[in-house]
Image 1 (cartoon, rainbow, N blue to C red):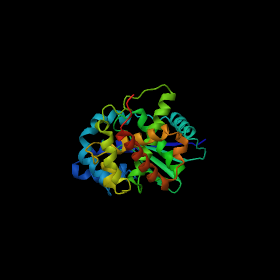
Image 2: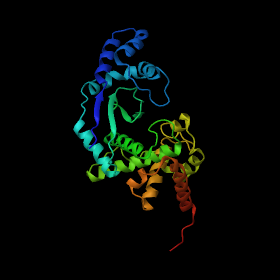
Image 3: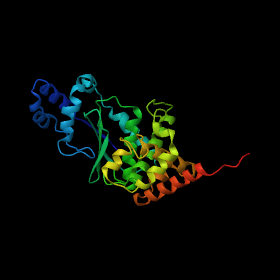
Image 4: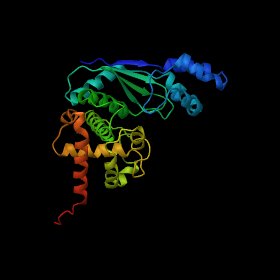
Length: 283
């Protein structure tokens, strides 16, 4: 059994915020560094960028989230149960050193994973009310990275990113279904990218081998080549759906070595497009 550690920096944030609220704006950065000093840098960020965005863009919203941050409760037992269930679903028995660190971000900060030697840290923001499925997805990414050798947040191709996303989404779906639970946030109903799946897949193909942050950002949180948000997320869902239909299991997918992922993703996209554009016989 893997013991997941739960840590939080919420008390440190509240100490900083209470002091900074009574301090002139130009002095708040030094208070941030003294009392909060979040130790990890989100993907694509520069030094002090998180602090500056919190002070410039997030500052006016913290009063609305203050009570949520103050009374946020960690549940280590439930977290460990979920993580063990994900490992069982992926049939991975090796121990994983994982710490889940709850922190306060900018209201735009996504969860991210840091790997230092053989230890993973999942940084999970709490200033916005997160859906149940989001935490499960991030835990699934940790197991997938540990099993396959894929990078958690940096130095990965767009193809690897969307494959990770697809595996995490399908693992989350399996867990929610097994527990007979429904998360209203876990749906594609409101996503524009679902209107033109073939166009999204065609336009993402030339970018699969890119590793620059601009590409990874634009195809997930930004606007992708087809003009929609979450194009990589949706493409990953489609690719893994296709592979599962072809007879793969989730445990088999997470065992695929990172060096083989891009080729499998590319082959799957061509197969999906070929099926979409091949005239079906009339009955």
